[in-house]
Amino acid sequence: MPSVPPALEEILGMAQARRDRAAARAADGERRRAAASGSVLPSADQLLRGHPPLGSDIRTDIREFVGSVPDGSVDRQAAASLRALSDAARRAAPGGGVDGAAVLAALRACRIAPPSDPDGTLRLRLAIYAALLGDAEAALAVAGEAALLAYVQDWHLEGDGTELVWQAAAWAAFGSSRLGPLRRLPWPISEMASTRDRIDAFADEFRLKVSRHLPELE
Image 1 (cartoon, one colour):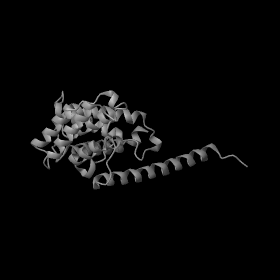
Image 2 (cartoon, rainbow, N blue to C red; image 1 turned 90 degrees about the vertical axis):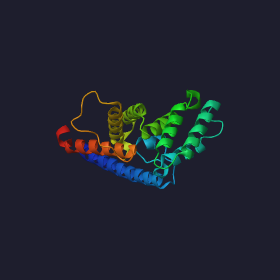
Image 3 (cartoon, rainbow, N blue to C red; image 1 turned 120 degrees about the vertical axis):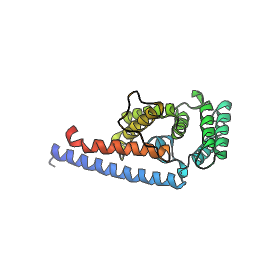
Image 4 (cartoon, helix red, strand yellow; image 1 turned 180 degrees about the vertical axis):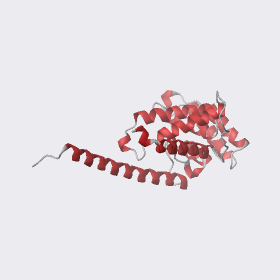
C-alpha cells in the first residue's frame, strides 16, 4: 500500500485540527450559554477564559460556589471566610453599590491557606471575583494567571487558543487603567456598565487589531 505523501499528510492533519477546534468552539459556546442562563456553575478556568458568572450575576455565582465546596475540604478559618463571603453576597443588592463594596471587603478578608487549596483553584476564583468587582491588584493577578495558562495550554484542543491571550491583555489594561497608567493616554478609557463588559470590550479590541495584521505577522 503506497504511503501518504508528507504534504498530503500535513493537509490531513490540519484538517483534523480544524475540526477539533470547531468542535471545541461549539462546546465552549454551549458552556458559556449554560453559565449565563444559570444552569451550570462555571469553573475557575472558565471564568478565567471570560465565561460569564452563573446567571450573569456574581452574587449568585459566589453563593453557589461556596455551597459547592465540600464540608471538611478546607480548614476552619477558610470555611469561616467562605461563609462570610456567601453571607455578604446574599445581602448584596442588585447592581452592587455599597453592598458590592461589602462583598469585595469579604473577598479581601478571605483566608485560604495552601493546604486547603493545594492547586490554587479556590484562590484563583476569589481573585477573579475581586477583579470583577473592580479591584485593580486582583485584575493584574488575574492577567498574570491568564497569560501563564495561555503559555502552557494545549492550543490544539482549544476552540480559540488565543482567548486567554486576549483576556490576559484585557485584564492587564484594566488593572493599569485603574491604578493609573505611568504615561498619559491619548484618550480616556470609557466606563461601562460592568467590569465584565469592560474586559470583553478590551479583549475584542485586541483581537480585532491583531487579526487585521495577521498577514504581516506570518
